[in-house]
Amino acid sequence: MSAALLVADSGPLIALARLNLLGLPSQLFSETLVTATVWHELTRAAPPVERQLLSDALSAGHLRVIDDSQVLPPALAAALLDAGEQSAIALAVELGATLLVDERRGRASAKGLGLNVLGTLGLLVRARDAGLVAAVRPLATALQASGYFLSSSLVDHTLAAIGE
Image (tube, rainbow, N blue to C red; front, side, top):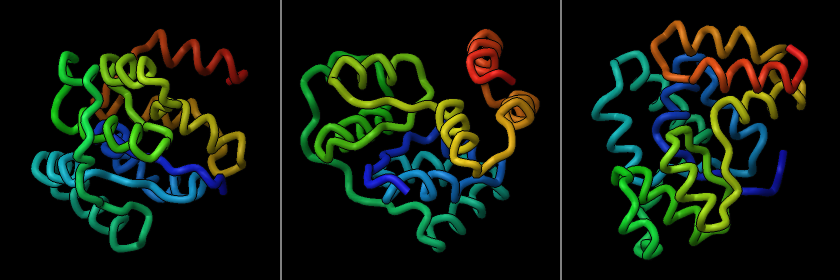
């Protein structure tokens, strides 16, 4: 397990819930933090099965919900990001944490602030490299089949880069 903190946005947590892998980040990072705003987005919009998996992950200590950061980097005010992305980025900046986010604008804004950014596919690659999952391809295929958006070109590029 790494000593690094991970702050997660809602999209990757939805993806991990669909794969029943919400415990995966806690095997790669010391702690996975979710802002109260992101948690509200997740629990308000998730189907009952995903909501239950998220609650179970919280109860098991795989996720920790914390208050939103009160410090919003000025660059975020101009970015076209939803409240959850803004809160996750602000917390990651405040803590110097890695940010788990899939949305393109969120990733670009976070990188512009100097954050280490990881997406769902990147997390799955790390998990494969650590021996926590056997392969990324079937997981990416399952996510796409579930309706979770992962661009085919990104999936193809990622799988080619890791030899799958």
